[in-house]
Image (cartoon, rainbow, N blue to C red; front, side):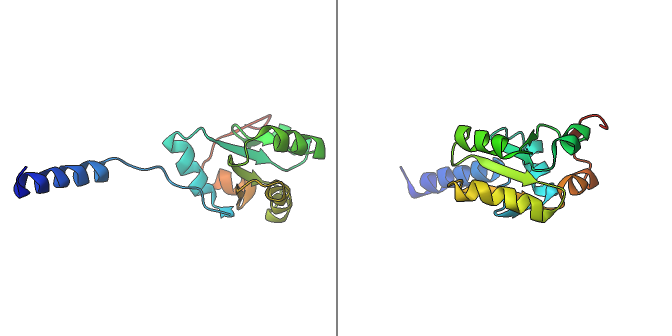
Length: 135
């Protein structure tokens, strides 16, 4: 193979690499609603969204696909069932509540746990989809 042919192949490989988009990566340990929405819009199903608010708030309205961790029992179930490298986003009534729940997962060895800043209000501010009684 000539030098010119090798350079042409390298140029084609670089063009292909640039043309293939890559999904947005999770921002640890805090993430914006916009960053999560971009990942979901990209079509990434390999993440878990957890709602640390009380059960009534969760039933009223929550991020589409989010699961409730309103009790220690529910938290324990998720800790025992999810892979430690699972990407997890946690939100609550406020960032302090979400961070306390996220810390429980981090203390159990989960490495990709992110607090979703702004919680449900932040999510709704960017027109993120919700479900529940209100939605």
